[in-house]
Image 1 (cartoon, rainbow, N blue to C red):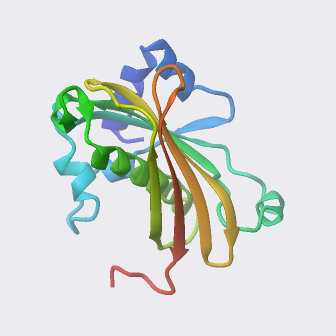
Image 2 (cartoon, rainbow, N blue to C red):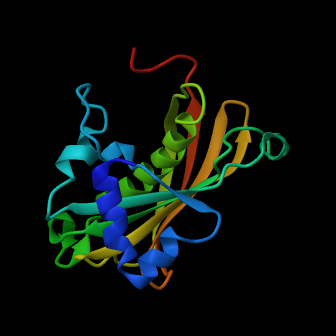
Length: 193
C-alpha cells in the first residue's frame, strides 16, 4: 500500500467499528488507487476534486481473499476477488441538505466502490476494461455528515462479457443507507485508446 493508504488504515483502525470492518477474517488491505492523481486525468474526480478536508477526507479499502479458479468457474467465471469495501470519512462539503450528503455523492461512492472491486481484480490479472452499462441506486436513509460510512460491493454473477454487481452504503451500525445494482460490460478493446 502507498503511504497515504497506510495512514488512512491506521486512522480507521483506531475507531472500533471501523477496525472490525477492516480486519474481518478473510479480508486483506488494498490500495484505493482511484485516490491517486494520474497524469492522464483518470480518476481526477475522486483523487483531486473530492480529496479535500471538507469532502472525502480519508478512504481505506479491503477486499475478500481471492477464490480458487475452480470456484470462480463454478460461479460463472469473472473475477476471483468477489467483494470489496471502503471506509470513507465524509466532511460537510458534500451536503445536499444541511448535515446530509448529496444523493449524487452517495451514488458516486457506490459507483467508485464497484470500480475498486474491478481494479483490485485487474491488478491481479491482465488488463480488464469494464464500462458501466447501468447503475440503479435506491436511497434508504440520510447519509449524515460529517461522519464515516462503509461502501461495499460484491459480484453477484457473470454472464459472458456481463458482470452484475451489488453495492451498499452502511453506517456504523450496519444500517443500509443506500443500495445499488450495476451491470458492467467488458469492453472489446481498451476504451482509453
